[in-house]
Length: 154
Image (cartoon, rainbow, N blue to C red; front, top):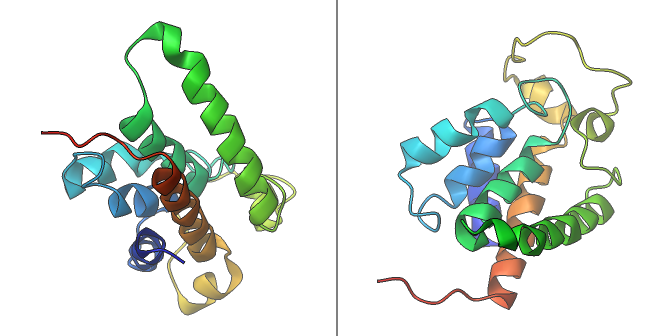
């Protein structure tokens, strides 16, 4: 477990969606305010707009990776895509559902069909893997960052 993993977990437990929980944990590293990180990630929860597609925790991981290691040079797309795919393989392997798809990680056969977020109740937290998935995404990121140190920005 990492410091960012603990932060992401706590953020989710405070009511933020999975992508927001991860992005907020890394707001400083992305050189964003908390408000900017939360706003940027707001539509990615629930597997992108609660459509149960790509997991919000993994989407948050990709946002942080792009903010920290991405490039504005179109010729560098392959480099970041290579890293995203490697991190996706690790997330799949460690997520318990061998997937980066929200509905599969939640054990759903199809999306619920509603954009309305579920109320955050004690029962909600008991049945969702999301708190541990946001922790996993941040733990994976912390290990990646440790293995790929960035130059110090001034």
